[in-house]
Image (tube, rainbow, N blue to C red; front, side, top):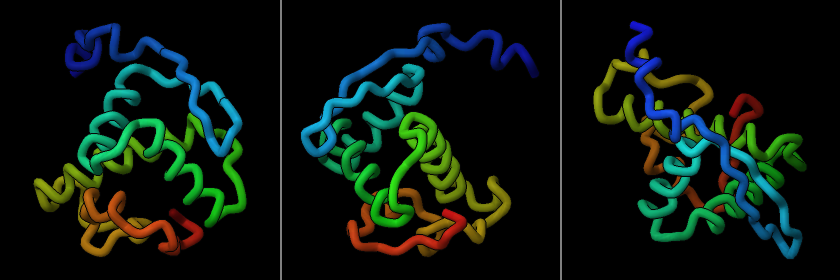
Length: 125
C-alpha cells in the first residue's frame, strides 16, 4: 500500500505561499501544491478565480463562526471535504453514506460550493 503514497510526485507535497487580498488586507497563505490545485479546480468549476473563492470561503466561515483561527488549515480541510463529497456523489456508498455534518442536501460537493453566501451551517460543519 505504501507504494501508492511513496511514488507521489514530490511537487504535489511541496508547499507554496501565495498572497491573497481579503477585504484590503494582504495575507500570505502557505499550502501544498496539491491543495492549490484542488482550490483552482473548485474555482474553475464555479467560474471564479482561486483568490475570489478563498475570499468567499473566508467570508462564509467568519459569518458562521465569527472568525477563522488558521485559514490555511481551514482551506486544507475544505479541499478534503470537497473531494470526499465529490467521491461520495460519483460512487455512492464509497464514503459510507451521508455524514451528519455534510452541509449539502444529498452530500453533493457541487451544491456545497454553489450555496448562497447566506446559508447556515450546523456547529459541526
